[in-house]
Length: 391
Ligand code: PMP
Figure 1 (cartoon, protein in one colour):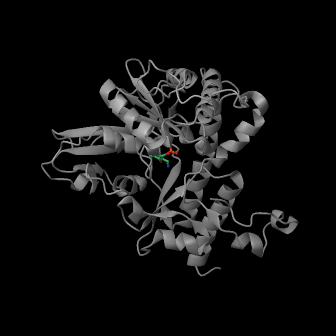
Figure 2 (cartoon, rainbow, N blue to C red):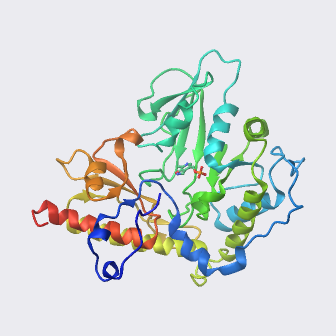
Figure 3 (cartoon, rainbow, N blue to C red):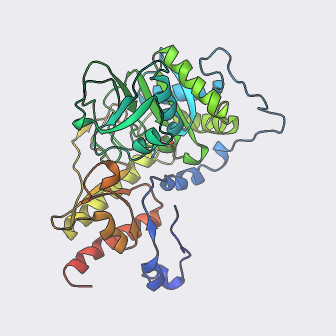
């Protein structure tokens, strides 16, 4: 997931040469490298040292339903939600996972039963996060099966609806769409942080999934967490992890605990200098990128991007619009395959079909390094020139 052959020659730095023009930009994954510059500036404040004799045990916390959850991680997760005001933690059990990807699997296991006669349907409204279908059907479980777009689900059968809000890929705030008896909701709130979207309330759904990958950009640590109202569900999710990996790396948990605590301590008051406040840094960089993208798209007249409503953000106190982690780009009429068009210009994205949607759409990560983003914008504006027979 890198810019390939990305060593820039002096000529490239002076306006681009053939090599730069041929460099492939990979904006397929939501790899959060744009945050590197913030963490570099912070220097050693988040450096975390672990000694040879520390954290040998499998166990962390016998009192928690999630017995391998490090108490410091639990504390910093609570501090973070408390400081931002995006989710309630009182009365919830916290379950830690190897990314929220593992928690998704744990949730599907926890919400189904070995006694049930038929597989439970798993649905999500299109365009849905492309991994849901893959995760659900990977091992062809007898407990559950992928049943596709929630808008189309009309069976009178039990179901689990995955609600992604803000949505990946489209960035919009969402609620459940099936709304029928016998359904269980799982809220995937990976992007419900103020750098991506206005925080309009402190959420209290039964099962809420979050991840360090999108919150602080530490995707490599592979830490996600679930806030779970029902203790028995939390215990069953823990059982899933116990059987699959006997817990979650202590090194990763302790590192993320440290980072979340630093972010939480610094973000209590919005408006402090940007160098100090991670969320403010993220928000202002994404806002700038979205502004540039909108201008480019407007000039090129080849694509459209969604508009987002102005809303009051309880965290920043501003009226602001969303600046999602992905741009859900639609090609203008007559161009059938947006991913292919962009690939022809050496921009790798994920096409609409993978999200249960139209191939006229493509999802582009907005979270790349500055250099990648700049090249992406340069190329988007070139597509207009090609279209006009100008290149
Ligand atoms: N849910 C959503 C909506 C996501 O976009 C992602 C990452 N792309 C995940 C879950 C999984 O993230 P991770 O496993 O890195 O925590």
